Image 1 (cartoon, helix red, strand yellow):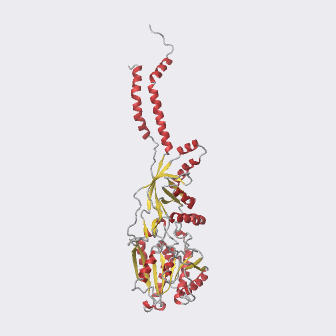
Image 2 (tube, helix red, strand yellow):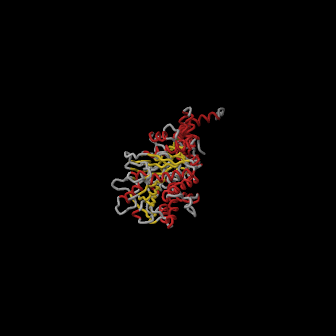
Image 3 (cartoon, helix red, strand yellow):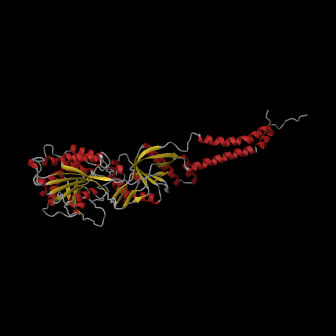
Length: 554
């Protein structure tokens, strides 16, 4: 049988060592982990590109920091979570100035549900602020989901501890809520080498000697733009312009193949690339046909009609850099456009804006042609080039008014045919030549079947580009594609990869939780150690207290 002294020695010499080993194991195996399983979701990265030597957009793509809400007092070295409707250019500048690492913008699942105020004053202004200059901030956009909203609400609740009524309240609140570590791995974004853009062109030759006939050029850039490349659906800008061009090609191809309606006028169709990078497609088209001595296509042009953003509204505006002279082809077309608009119940007006030669970029596509002394104008519903409605994440296919686009297409077709044939077109547009919502809707569905940011359309085998080429081949003669790249010595434009990624959100306990847990373990072990060190005295006292009247032995 063990004596009391033996028991004391066992407890003193053995128990503390067992506790030191066993307690950390019990903590690590506890059912409340410090880091929960990750939630993963797709995010779309902000544009990163260079134009005329100036860097734009986000220059970083990697994220591995803790999340904070937009309302947090300090966001330095953090990933800021913000809903699109709550973000303003001022908020964005504050996030950048405080040294945040990343910004995650939550988009509503239905962008068309945004009010006009949010669309015009907030969304488009924020996009412009983010793309105006470069930033080391890794900016991502993601559609709201129930899981992502739960993370956002938790982060926002955690950030509210900075405005708690007392330090104790803030500590209790921080311990009761989880933080989140936001992670985007992979490699840093890199320059896309030898990026190739593609012009698609075709023509309808007039009756007679082609080289001796004047030409009308119809142009629409087929790319789109937005804050994030993979959100650049471009329903109105410039999906609507492409739709009108394709519908005109369909109608005019029938008229040009009939001897009775074959006019003495050439038509050139151009689906140009790089519209949002200073109309690089039109620049290349002009170089090919004006600087090459063997190409007479643009040697004598009536005018060049550029189609841009005409998918909604009751007003069409003809933007010109120089007003057409009285009785010139351009003036007669404008008169025909006014007449066709009046018959359709819409307003047609001319907007004159001189070309600013001090700027590196042109405001409208027709300015590329006007600078080469060719009569040209852009047809658009917009009052000006910088309204923010061109190149936005809110420019979705649902944003297009199909009835208005069909009506506007018919107005353009009527005006163009009136100019070409110099007569009423009511007897011409029949037997399948009339503009219908079915036809316009099918073109729109095709054009908006994928995002159309320039880097997503690059390469020589893009499916959408090939489809557009096949359509022009069907309706025009001598359809061809022209591939071109930026000059390697002095590139005017460049794009970078990593347009989307998978972001992981790890639920983590706050630093205060780790500190208090460590402090509790130290205090617990300290108490055990003190208890065992003084156990003999405690044991003796307990024995004496339990036997106060023990009789003396003889």
